[in-house]
Amino acid sequence: MQAEQVRQVVLDIIADVSMEDDLSNIKDEVALRDQLDLDSMDFLDIVMELKKRHKVEVPQEDYPRLASLSSCVEYLTPKMMQ
Amino acid sequence: MSERFDALIIGAGMSGMAASIRLAMYGQKVVVLERHLIPGGLNSYYQRGKRSFDVGLHALTNFVEKGQKGPLTKLMKQLRIPYEAFDLIPQKRSLIHFPSQKLGFTNEFEYFRSEVHQAFPNDTENFDRLIEKIRSFNETALTNEYLSAKLVVKQFIRDELLVEMIFAPLLIYGSAWENDMDFSQFVIMFKALYFEGFSRPRGGVRTIIDLLMKKMEEVGVDLRFKTGVAAIITGEGRVRGVETDKGDILECAKIYSSAGFGETLKMMTDEPSTQPRVGALSFTESLFCLDKKVRSTGFEDTIVFYNDSDKYHYQASAELYDPRSAVICVPNNYSQDDAQEEMVRVTYIANFAKWNELPRPQYKIEKEKMGQAAWNLVNQVVPNLNANILFQDLFTPTTVKKYTGHEGGAVYGSPDKTRSGQTGIEGLYIIGTDQGFLGIVGAMLSGISIANLYGLVGGDA
Ligand SMILES: Cc1cc2nc3c(=O)[nH]c(=O)nc-3n(C[C@H](O)[C@H](O)[C@H](O)COP(=O)(O)OP(=O)(O)OC[C@H]3O[C@@H](n4cnc5c(N)ncnc54)[C@H](O)[C@@H]3O)c2cc1C
Image (cartoon, rainbow over all chains, first blue to last red; front, top):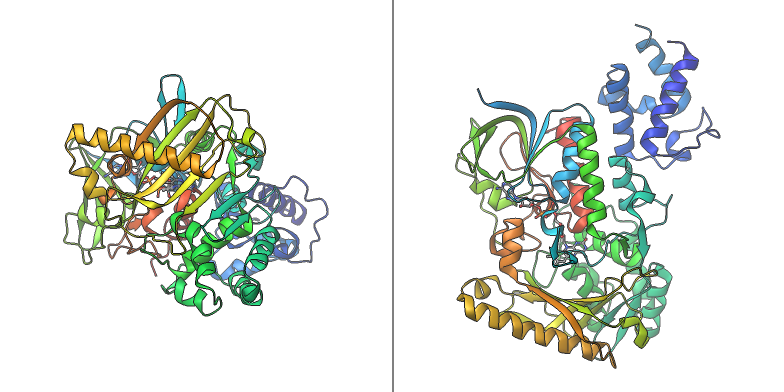
């Protein structure tokens, strides 16, 4: 998967988890927490959805790497190459 | 060969249903075993003739508007149920009704704050400092120590009457302790009632139950009614499975039980390491269907927390019921009302043992007497009502026991909670009432939190 597709995958998941329809204004570099109403329960769901939909495992110590959209893409793209 | 599951949930009350959805959503093979014929537990519904009644819904706490943060929207997100589906009607106002003082509260905290400031001018700054403390406290941390809320609050508030009035609704809506509550629980309830407030789904508790049932079906939860758990099979300090009332064996990796802390431990085949106390607080409830809207007399309140003196007694009732205080709820007196008939419900604190030992004919007579007292109280609190009773129904602590399995008909379970959900047995967790998040919203959040922690993150540490 290319970076652009990974970005879309993450956006789709965030939309489902946060139950927001409009994520068009989201800024890639800004922490997701600061832009959306996401708490630790929601981050758990992002991780669970990645596993369920794309078989990607994110160990607990790597959760900080999902902080912003761009850090998600950077972290997940190599994992989703295989 | 016996069946095998990843997760087995005891009870299809609010907590069990919510937990089952979380686990099945992420691919676990989940079975829910419920002793009764219908879901909901303490918050169920029933039919009498053409009328339909909610067992335990006065109000849904934690009201917020769509898009606002709070426990209610958090649980909706976790269960992937859209806000609109709950179809919430906000309250107009509720009232703390003591003889020498009255305090109203609405879904806008400022209203309550100004009521307190007006009625207790010597405590205005103290009250505001208490609010600061409450605002900044992380009440849902599963690691919080247990602490007396009365002790904390009295460090801020001088006037005993104000302390009693603040506590009255919070105790009766969410304390398993007598005359006090754990400080974390106090903060949960304070935010739930005074910061956020009340609403009611248009269709009553049925709306919530139907939404949960639909979700359970969608995510593939195996739900079995008329299937009580008789024993929890343990061995070498961990869970193996259960034996049902009918003698069937089901194997499982993890059990999430909403049957109560003590009740769950007693079902274990191994000797439990602790024995939580049986809760002392149970209720009676009197329901009156009326031919006249309470609102037509100018009475606008949804819930009245009535007390007959300056001291509020939230403790085991010495008699069948304690007439000194009551909750009077007009479940249709919300900002919209589609109901044809009016309904009023009156809750008294009651004594389980005393009701339980009454012989049948006496039980009926005492129930009638209690209903009469409740009706008199309604007419005292709502002057000039002049309504006729079209139908009435009454239930007692023995009914609570029947619906929940809680020993002593303890509505809020044991005073000994297990906030972490742990039981000392690997793979056996407590959800709902005895985990400690109380009420409808609390029970659902409890099921979600414990399922997340032990089922999805997988941490016993
Ligand atoms: C009169 C009254 C009014 C109330 N009003 C409100 C209100 O207005 N707002 C609010 O938020 N809360 C209210 N509550 C409180 C609320 O109903 C409870 O806090 C909440 O429903 C608890 O949910 P739970 O899942 O923890 O447990 P429960 O509802 O007790 O569910 C436990 C389930 O487990 C089942 N079970 C038990 N043992 C077994 C077994 N061995 N095998 C199989 N199944 C078993 C039971 O049958 C039950 O269905 C009220 C309660 C009462 C009594």
